[in-house]
Length: 360
Image (cartoon, rainbow, N blue to C red; front, side, top):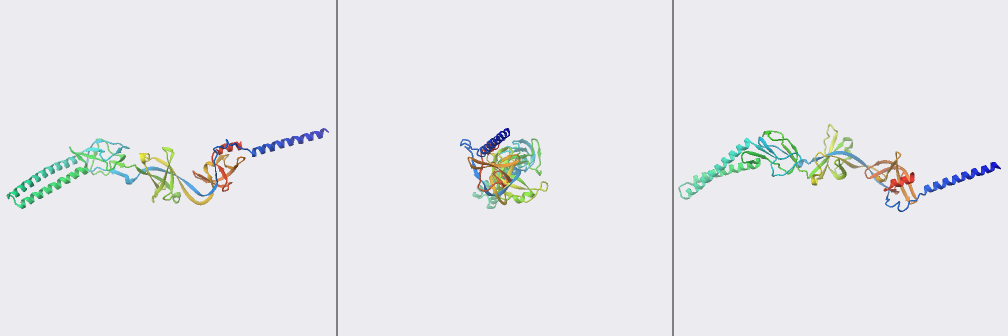
């Protein structure tokens, strides 16, 4: 009798535990979210897309050589004034530097002599003109006087042009101005330096920076992935939260023998001059792999326990946690090699909240 009672009690206990376990499993499987809990949750359907590879690149801002000029001295002299430093914005009017120049004084001497010659020739011609009218001078003498005036006028005009081209000022000063309005990128001159007219090196490098390009390094193994016209997302190291979208406009054909790279150029407008020469940046370029695969929005992925998961939405009472295999990803999409079919609804916002609620 005692044995029967013990047996019956044991069976009842097991049945109670079994029922409790089933109810817990049932409760866990039918976890229901309230409308407030699901507020703000979004999902999107997975779909077949072309698989895009993503190439990460490094580059730097470079002035456009078509907007870059190097300023050379045309005559020699000693530097007495330097008005700009590297990074300064210059215009066409204000001198970059001023030189005290013996050559400039020689030009000034010639110019003053040419002015005197012109005034004498003009006066001589006027005298001959009056004499000719009074029959005291021949037509030949008048013609000679006119010829002398034309020669003197031409010489004076030549020296005026020299003054204009060389920017010579009174007192034999030679002024060097920038031929373009822009920023000084290089400066190789200082006060009291002696400048030679036959020097091969330039004194200033000036560039317009309203348009620049970014030169990206492309390694040999990646050359086939980069094409003209491809879009590239650019981030400056100085402003990593901001993204600039550009287009590859030119791919150079020469490989750098040291870095084993070629340059890809992306031209950009530069209002406000926020892009400064030699700034470093990174770029991400998408290229086609000629294959297709099921894909989802990358932000839907959950990485936990060295595995990837997605939250599949069937209904408020049926949200599934599913492990998937990720083939590759870009900033926008993740390509799933197994574990997901096209058309399934994948939660893309608050998925971590739901994952923790269902899997704790």
